[in-house]
Length: 234
Image (cartoon, rainbow, N blue to C red; front, side, top):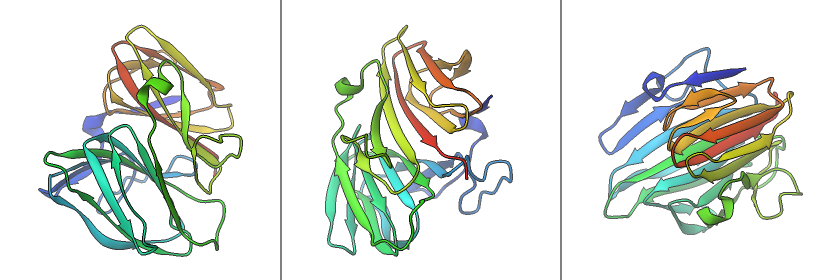
């Protein structure tokens, strides 16, 4: 089953410096049918104006993955970590027992990100942060794990949850498959391009909530960049 959540149907708020669209209930947006999808709790599509960002604020007991679509995001946290993550690359933060961080767009133009929150399956551990470049050419025509709670995904950034975040780039006409298993929950968003997911059409920045599908088969109707979360049932 594939439930398409068109971009126009998403919740959100425009704060001027931040234009946020919410695939799931978040902040002042609440939809009882869109609270979570398995362990996936938040998928925010944020556009951040130049020279602005999120001032220091706390998190705990959440795995937070940031996929940069355009521009770059600069992170700083209470552990002393600081880093700049560019378009196509990924940063992860395991909030653990508690952490404060800020995220700013210090670039001359807008920065666009997907921020993904996944409920952890481990509690009581200290916080951690990491970032890594993921060249788009390395995921051409196939799904590649970007962040993962599985030890076998050695090249992915580690997260403390029964889930993985994957990326793929497809040329028009190409197809990529991911064997998710019918007992798992999938959520797929094209960062760019138009695709078909198991025959169901999906436009840029639409979301597809996938369940009871053993294999996710994506066909690109035009050049596309994809982000997919594979998460356990709660």
